[in-house]
Image 1 (tube, helix red, strand yellow):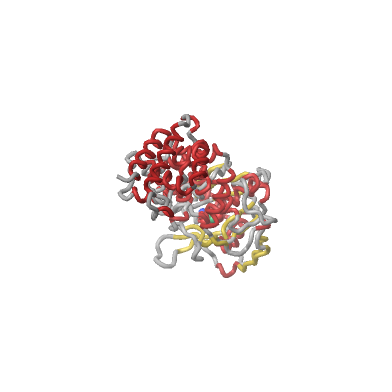
Image 2 (cartoon, protein in one colour; image 1 turned 90 degrees about the vertical axis):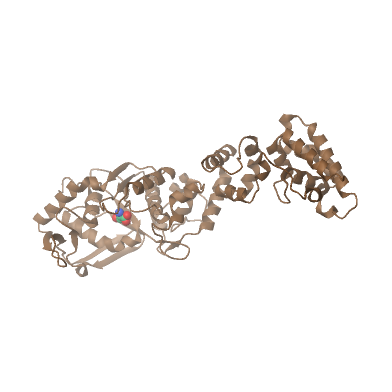
Length: 459
Ligand code: GLU
């Protein structure tokens, strides 16, 4: 055993060993991220081990969710193992422990059905140096001769994890603090097996906003949900890295490379971290702001293709509205909310002005004046005339603005631009008229302005 478990690898080797018994939540993935950053920082390897030995609770779909989450977050790993494939190896180690007197078969007291395997506890003080918490000591006597296998061929978690970590030459075990109490048992097993004890680092808990523990049932906090809502993977990594860790300065926005360079286990806190969805949004917005125009457009496009809006946002409309979206969208899902508010309804092919448009087209401050509707019709006709002179290729938000601006300055900005905006959107609140004109294109814009002029003109 000693020979086969010898550490033939060099350098840092960490592992992420999720149990595929539920959707990945932010706490699980935060553990993966810390292991990833630590491995990258030290030029080491990340081993993913699917701990699927609980056949009743493990599901293939959860395993797929784990791997899809890692892929989406762009967390590369060097090896992928399935614990269930290693059953023979676990059993071999268990048998050897029995032979060497470190474990023994015992009657299961309760039902007297079958026999379990108990570890022969040497009952000592186990002390380990946690890289985050410092020295931690446990009296193992109180653990008694704990069960390490439900049956001679069914080893339990502690044994499987210790054998796998040793065989995979894991140097650092970075995991949630809910595993601290498992560590003394696992160290006792390592000593009995004669394998090295890795370094431990137990991460603080991640709590939901109501301070409850995150669980596999908190669906909204799953990685799949964030992906579906259109978060950027690097923003999610950035935000989750800050849950329990902070850099030397107060910096909060990091690219992947910057995180790898700054990450350090000694700066991980011991107190629980609380997930703050507002902060995650803010971090996403900062990452969106860092994207080039091309990357930004591609990111939004990918979301829209996967979640088509009731009114399609594509082609020239998408291009024309991009600068506005850049200002307003913090997370792609905001576009769905804007669509719900009707902000894109002006793009509908069956667009028509509302019933009360004749009055609504008039700039509100002017509605009491006698010739208000006549004036409004005149402004709309003039706007149509000015834009008709604009060549198609100049029909951009900027081109439209330049064509209308001097006239609007001369006649009053509100007096001219309100009716133009209303003519294009049929709404009191909407995007600016120049962007909407560019989004609609010349022909449609002129048609709407002329229809609105006719509508405003008194009979
Ligand atoms: N499969 C265990 C879990 O998901 C792994 C624990 C460990 O890191 O040792 O909690």
